[in-house]
Image (tube, rainbow, N blue to C red; front, side, top):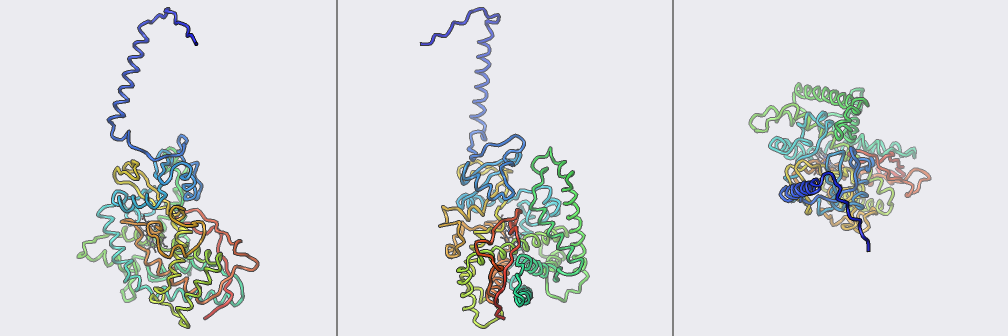
Length: 503
Ligand code: HEM
């Protein structure tokens, strides 16, 4: 038995200890009452990995954030995890069930998007449709997109553009195939999509001439800046770094030059006698001048929407097409099956129309599988407009919420063998598990436009050519390395050889 030595009563302040005890008691009572009656304190927060002062969890993220979120989530909190980007709380959502709570059950509460200085500067102080906060103003812009610019009818009316541009691409590939040299599919598909989107938006292409090239360079820079993280947006005390590294100046330069270009385009359209076919700028100008529609918009809205269409339209469509061809070249059995479907449905017919595409079910399954396996926009960003409970966790108003669509598409809870590229598993279309273009109010209005282009180009590529990898390359040699960014492309360009031509 341990005997503690008795404390000698030679303390000069014998009244001090009871006083200290009383003080401690009062403090405990104060904090206990505060904890009990503070409505926020006993709310359950999602699990979180340990974080560092100042940085929070930023040091745990690689440039491919969707992959970092998945591995951190599996270790620290699945399917809902709390991270800190510096001192900003960010909720990461990684299962279909949790994503549906955000985008369906609480769609209205999560109808805002988080934004940084970069988006504000590039998108006319959020006067565009992609970044505008939820409200009457955003509703007006979104309905213009859905009803006037990207409706089924409008997408059909642009069929001649898709046909003409696809035909030009086929001719280009044919001329390369005669020499047996590999074609750079990444480059060709990017230029096709730029041409389709520029003709739909401006009524002309910008792939030739100095002006055109400069504009396409600006567009590439816009996408690059949107995909970069500005340090100052998350750690305000380090915002000087963005200025010293020239990042801020670069954003300003690109924003100013794009604005000048768009002003010129609008001016040209205003001077035009309007006899040609209607493009997006014509439609937006009509709404601008028409006071009876009640949808009054200004020129910043027009320019913001155009930039959204250019940014959203070209990059994600190109990435999907390039990844689809990557998947097919890596899986010759799938390529063969798709080629048989396309050729059986078309017979000798060379021009492919929407009715033909509607019959190509395996083609649709291949596109869906590409969106699942190589999700082009892997992370969907939303912001809470009010305090909400999600999967039993508290999410406070203003919290950034990132939905990892890529991880949801590879969740073994939802998919058999999710690590394999297998269009057959996609044939039934598990809708809530496949959310590459979002769900709910803020979902993508350009899906029909994108799919019409993707399906037409793929069907043509497979009907008119047989494909192989460049000489000496095996299917397993073809890499799938991703390039970081808001839209995830292949890091290395995709080269393939069109061995046989059938037109
Ligand atoms: C395969 C191609 C495409 C993919 C994967 C894609 C993906 C997405 C995603 C994930 C979102 C966010 C959805 C959400 O938060 O719920 C989005 C929004 C948007 N997309 Fe797309 N997109 C594609 C094509 C297009 C095209 C062709 C256009 C225009 C011509 C377009 C215009 C937009 C716009 C304007 C928004 C913002 C909508 C809003 O905030 O209300 N997208 N897209």
